[in-house]
Amino acid sequence: MKRIILRELAVAALLVAAPLNLAGAAEMPLKAPAVVLFDWTGFYAGADAGYSWGSSRATTTADTSLLGAVYTQGVTHKGWEASVEGGYCWQSPVAMAACFEVRYDFPRERSGTTSIDIPLTTVYNQTRIDPLLIGPQLGFLTDLNRTMWYVAGGLAVGEVGGSSTAIGTGGTSVADPANKWITGWYVGAGIEHMIDRHWGLKVEYDYVRLASSGACAPYVGSNYATFTGLGASSCLGANAFDNVTTVGIDYHFGAH
Image 1 (spheres, rainbow, N blue to C red):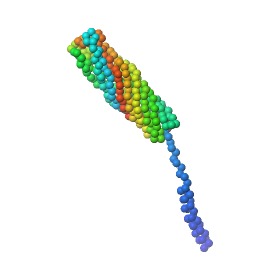
Image 2: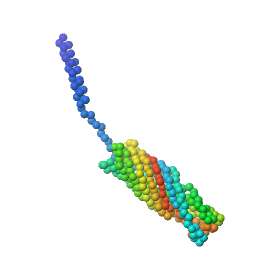
Image 3: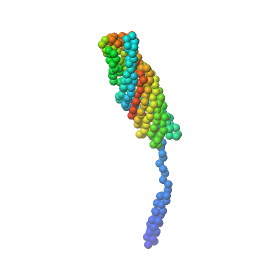
Image 4: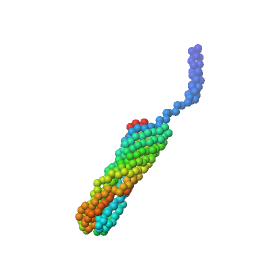
């Protein structure tokens, strides 16, 4: 009988203690998970695909001994392209980041062939541009620093050129200047979002300006009705500008 009584008392004590333990556990504060902020600092490299559209100018100067006239034509260029890029980013403690980037777009962008009629001759022009963009990106960070909204701008360096063919009553003459290296500028804006510790997806728009007189050369050939080779020339790729929209992926080597 004594054993039975002791056993019943032990069970009763456990039943009383259990609610007290549960209540105490419920009152214990839960530890909040640690917030991990992304850090953009480090080198990166990437590739893009995009579409560009713009215009440049083709100027034909007829032989001054015959017509003494200058004919100017706007030539549009557009098409799909790819690009490669690389750079380095710094991140500040106040959710801001700055990157310095070099990007090359390829292949060389060519216009379609356009024509302009002048006395006794039709001139067919094609222009080309080939830009390299060098400059900073300045942005602010959201989404635990995983998304950067930025503006870009800086130096544009590239080649311009083209070819011009004049066909008339006297035959055919061609001006085919070598590509000319020129400098200009660009401005743009974009957004990049990190999908893990190293890979980021980005979208960017840039306006590129390569203002110059273009690449020039004399006409050579048999079209003596208008182009005698005594002053007739063509300048191609002048005042070039481009609108470029790209979608790409970057790998950030030091980011975490």
